[in-house]
Image 1 (cartoon, one colour):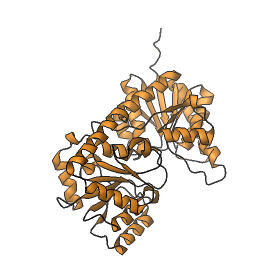
Image 2 (tube, one colour; image 1 turned 90 degrees about the horizontal axis):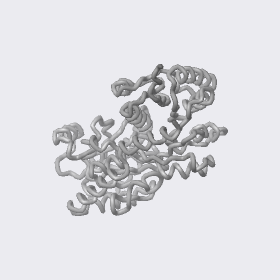
Image 3 (cartoon, one colour; image 1 turned 120 degrees about the vertical axis):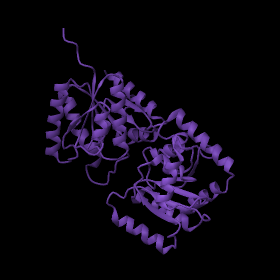
Image 4 (cartoon, one colour; image 1 turned 90 degrees about the vertical axis):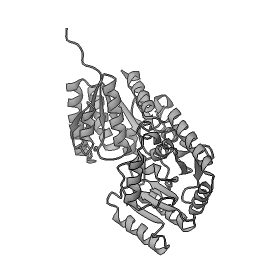
Length: 377
């Protein structure tokens, strides 16, 4: 008698470039493989394919970034064939266009359909709510924060019985200050020209308007002291906004106090370079993984008081929250932190890391997601 194949999970997303959705896909593929199951990922490909396959997962290249109805229909047929051929039990969608193809494939093949609702998704155009609604059609819908779970109920009327709230996680071994060699921090200090002893305020995020780099620039014009602000992140081709930031920095006379340093490959070391880590998003963040990464590195954090960071930053205990877009409030909060005795800052960093280890680790996220799969299988 032939032994049935191990359970299989297929995750679908547009491509395997850099980003939180992509990292989450690899983390879950890793958990699936380590559970003794078979892990598949379908996407248009990208730089993370090699890392995925090194985990023991299989990548299937399909043009899943397309939003055209014909392309979605063709992808649905290809996914259905893959599901049937490999006896895949779970089809897990992480983005809208691939989710429509996945939903059709699951309906035709009988696979269980799971979605992860990663954002609030703009509804500015006619028909956009319907387009977004596919992310609420899973037999189980994973919300990445309580904020997103409430959004699902309010926006789509999703049955709470289908929602599973699973917060994003941080790799506690990678983001561990005790494991970062001083040479790694020194290398970044030299590359970015950061003088020893100068306070560093860091905003780690892709350079785009809603991430709030402009708010931090305005805050730096109001103080604080001789602090140096580092805007760490890739502009991803947004040269217009970068030029706008540079012009504003020059106009405010901040050329020696605010720097755009681009992408950092070694984020744990980068965060250790900071005295204060800022999250300044002006739109609600679905979760905000950079916040918990900074907390895991025992940094003092200031976050915008909306969206996911309300669940990860306890005011005055594991960080501070300020009104979004309020440069004066952000400047005052930075001043307040830099004026604290070092022992108080160290104590807050320790509390922040403890909170992350208690509720926001990659291992916890992986275990909770596997539990969702087991519910259905």
